[in-house]
Image 1: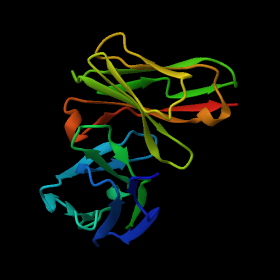
Image 2: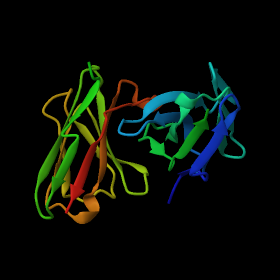
Image 3: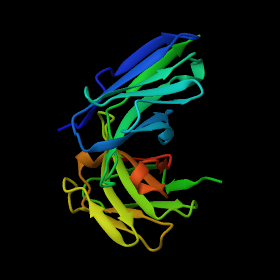
Length: 112
Length: 113
């Protein structure tokens, strides 16, 4: 039973345009959401997070939006760069501090 | 300096063997984890270890056992390896378990023949 879902396994975007990666979750106890980025042959690296008390968090080119009523979050990257090409994992953790639950990942390809 | 390091990076072995993967972190973190990334690329938690408290994902077979000689190390032992154990295993650590902000190692690719 997947509690965190990324329904798009891949996304292709032109350099300079916006990349939007989506994530849905089912567990209403989740209260902290994160995005991780993973390059081949490397471990995931933390990118950006958002608390459930917020609906937006911005860090440079990266913005995460949270819609609690829809149990949906998204990561916006603008402008997209070729170096952003990687697999992006959505993740969530509940308010009891239980273990981080990951989505299946979305492979982003930014074309020059 | 690598913050979270795992060895070996690649491991090929026969079914039925026993193997270990080592993990060390030099970040001074209190909590360490093992994750498994299967063939479908899902990252699934196996264990969490904090101040000698072990939390086990109930779906993990008891052939898998974590061992922590000290706070900086969390090794993964696997007995009687099976074909389905083939995966990439990631070690991770954090100083703030409630935030979910983990530092991952590079992964150890295990292939069971």
